[in-house]
Image 1 (cartoon, rainbow, N blue to C red):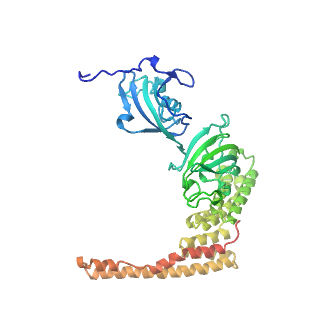
Image 2: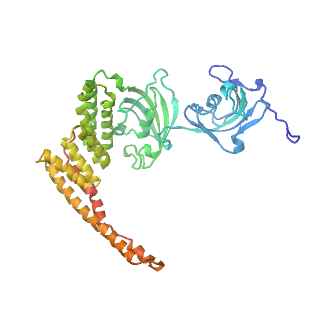
Image 3: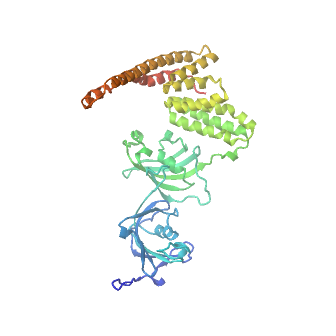
Length: 467
């Protein structure tokens, strides 16, 4: 130490100054001394993101780290083992605005290893921590902050099961907009189908992480709430952020793969789910139908079946569901996914007329008119009197002809321009003229593109009923 430096002192070095043992086990591994009282109310719950300022010292008073010196607030998710054990326990005991001294013995700090060179082995550390604020845990899959959760009540300590998509859930909710209640009710619904009873996506996301009896407070951004349209039933305006208090009162655990006693049970359940999906399809609720069909398909997925006889027994319902997926994707104007679903059916049953017809329509969406013609021709080989296929093949041939004409004109213009460029070496004075020449109208190609939706509308109007 140089003569100019003052000796480091620590007025809290004596164990008598450490305050109270706050360890749950009362093992004297963590002490807390309040330096400044915080606000009244509850402290931060597990899972939330807390924001703190701190200064870390050795018992001799040496500062080894300080957010205050860096002028940077430190944030972490409480109770997730993102920090040392002493911080998870200590910060959880604090109130907003509180400043406290946390004294952490090695087992609540960095243990035998320490963190050389600043923190020696088996070091007892002291942290002067100020709890500035906290916010709910981000529970969205892509961590965009769209749904934040604060835990209000822990729920069942003995039951660790959580609802999955397809679970029948009984919940009590209180929705607020700008502090005013707009929705308070008890709801019994199937998880994954909440839109049928104005349950927003943010609530469904949260329920998948909840236990029976648990209560949470959710802050939900518009894209996970009522979106750009709002909700007329609740007088929620477009693009509104809302909050919901959600209590999971009860739910029915869905069967796991090992819970089915036989293949017949699988077929029965998949058929029941499929019928619900078909009802959504007929109502024009295609996103919901897609979700339900996929759930039904998961029940009879071949990856869950190990015997050839079980795979054979579930083949019909599996192909029907794949075919219906193709129909849904067509309604959603997703040609690529529709083709993938139809191909799955045709691999098992090359003579499936519905799958051939739907693949033909999907090829029209993708402007693969030649492939569409081939699919409709196959339909007519199998069923020469199929009126829908006859109509579609005429339509597809017309579009194929128009596409070839447009393509021919397009390349003719390119060759013409290249020929002119070869004849005339451009100079700086030609730039303006050249730019004008390179502006192509593309009218014929655009006409083909413009007919894409027309083709889809005409095709789906002639489509047969769902399986």
